[in-house]
Structures are given as structure tokens and as C-alpha cells.
Image (cartoon, rainbow, N blue to C red; front, side):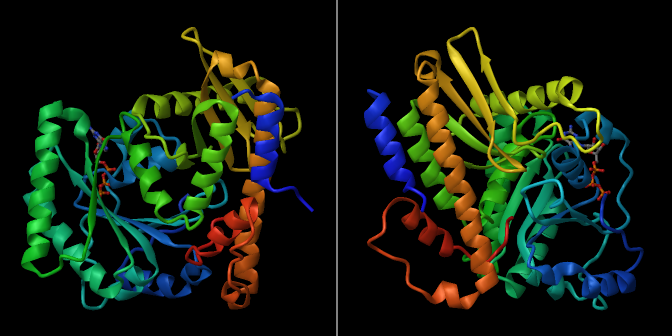
Length: 391
Ligand SMILES: Nc1nc2c(ncn2[C@@H]2O[C@H](COP(=O)(O)OP(=O)(O)OP(=O)(O)O)[C@@H](O)[C@H]2O)c(=O)[nH]1
């Protein structure tokens, strides 16, 4: 029987801490066939990337999930097929990402758009902020209003993209204008209940990863539990900020509840790059099965401004990356111990959610215990999520 997570932390506090894409389809008929045969029924939610031609959809997908450098996207050809990308083999982000070519009229009467929207978790609409966006706003309205009627559960996310070319004032003004017009259009159509979230993004900085992180977080039913665990962990370990990262995409799937500042996030992303690069060069064993990131992965980087960065493996795809002061790092034993408890709790949370899915309604119908504390409470919180699988 495992000791409760909170109790362990409290104990340690008292003791030692004074304080390839899947496939492309050539035409609508083939696409329809593929949709029907596709593993959409495998319960993996879809994230759709939509928007006008050349707005940057494929670039976003390639940069975030396939490590393409932003400059290489200049040579991407226009997408003329729908691409379904299943990234779950390499990433914690267990979704299908569908990249729609800008020119496809997916409202063609022969095409069953309802089927697409029914299994969709998030619809990302990409608007090129460096271009005239009037046409894009028209398409946005058409797309989200149709999708909402089919599936009101979809999260509608608008990426105001390519903002690297705009001055700070221009960025704010563009966001305000797009926000205003898009919501006016919805109000005119009596669709006030349809909520749009807006993000300023560019593939040339970390903003695209941050925005994608937020999109993905909304689809993670265990998010409140993860945040809770991170809060407990950092407050008992003297850590300033902690992120739970998907190592491959550098999306953070959870962080503690203190506000995220872009610099801290960038620092942690850079640390992941450094660790993976060094590990690729010096860490791989001769046999072809070894990975740059595995159970042994651990790194500590001391910066010359008394900040320490700490990275440690949590699961096959997840790493915890923390920022702390040098003084706090003197209690490394405590941090390591608390990390051990944290890691165990994370594993248990996901074991609970996968066994919940296996046992289905029977488990979900049992009332969560109100008397339990620590992990028991966290487990019952995990059960409250929507039945979307992530591991
Ligand atoms: N400046 C800037 N250019 C970008 C950014 N993202 C993408 N681009 C450029 O925009 C162009 C179009 O990008 P794509 O990813 O092919 O656009 P798409 O929306 O997939 O286009 P279609 O396949 O035709 O629907 C490329 O030249 C990219 O380099 C960005 O954040 N900033």
C-alpha cells in the first residue's frame, strides 16, 4: 500500500525543510471512405487545423510536432490533401491532428462534414495577421458556426498567426480588431454561446508552443489533478516554477498555478533541447534500441544568476522541468525525495484513468470518497474528467 502523497511530502517537509503523416486523400469520395474506415472510433480526439491557403497551418504542425526548423517551412508546398497525423507513438499528446488544405471546400454537399466535427476536440483556425484578414474572418465564421451546430463541445481556438512581422502596437490592435469583428459576427448570428479563444502566434518564437500547450491542456481531463500535484510538489520543495513537458513537442501539459511568464517557459524549452542534443551525441549506447530520453534522463544546469534548472524523467514521454534558486537547491535530497513521490503520484493518476476506461461506467458510477485525503482525493478528481484517453 502506498503512502499518501501529501503525507509523504508533509513528512519530508517537517523532517528536513525548515521551509508522417498517416495518409493523404485525393478527393472527397476517397476522403469519405477513409473517414469511415479511420480509427476515429478509437476515441482519440481530433485537433483540426483550418484556415485560408498559406496561412501557416502545415508550418505549425511541422514545427511543433516534427521538429522542422521555421526557416525550412519556406519550402513547404501547398497542401492539396487532408493530412491526418497521429503523433501518439512519440508523444504524450494522444491526438490526431488533421491539417486541412486551405482551398478545400469541406462544406461541399457530397462531403459529410458532420462526421469530422463529431469526433473533434479542438478546432484551430489560423489567420495570417500579415495579410488582409477580411476573407479569413468570413471563413472563420462559416466554419465555427457549422461546427458548433454539429458539436457544441468543440473548443474553438483562433491563432492570429505570423505576428513576428508586426510591431507590438500593431499586434495588440490586430488582435483587438479580429476579436471584435469575429464576436460581432457571432452575435449577429445569435451564437453568443460559441466561445472563441485568441492567441498571437509565430513559428519563429515560442508563442506557437505556448498556444498549442493551452489548446492541448483544455483536452486533458486530468489537468486539475496535475496542477494540484505540481502545486504540492513545488511548495514543499522550495521550487519557483515547474512545468510538466511533453518532451517531443515541448508542449507543457501542466504547470503549477503561479502565472507563466514567457521567459521561464523559453528557458525550460531550451533546457530540453540541450539535454536531448547532448544525450544524442554522448548518451546513446551502441545498440540501436537506446533512446536519447529514457528513465535515466536527469539534468541540472546552474546559471550564473543563482538560478538552477532541474529536469527529470517522469514517464516515457513526460519530463518535469523546474526553476529554482541556488539556496533551495542545497536541499537536493529533499527535492529528489519529493520528486520520487510526485512521479509515483503521476503514474497512479494515469493508471487510474486508464483502468477507469477499461472498467467503464461501473467505475465511474461509484461515488468518489469524500473522506480520503491526498492521492485518493486526486484520484477521484481524475475520474471526473471526460472519458478521453491520454496514455
Ligand atoms: N513570417 C512567418 N511566416 C510563416 C509563419 N508560419 C508560416 N509561415 C510561412 O507561411 C507560408 C505558408 O505556410 P504553410 O504552412 O504552407 O501554409 P498552409 O496554411 O499549410 O497552406 P496551404 O497548404 O496552402 O493550405 C510558408 O512560406 C511559411 O514559411 C510565421 O509564423 N511567420
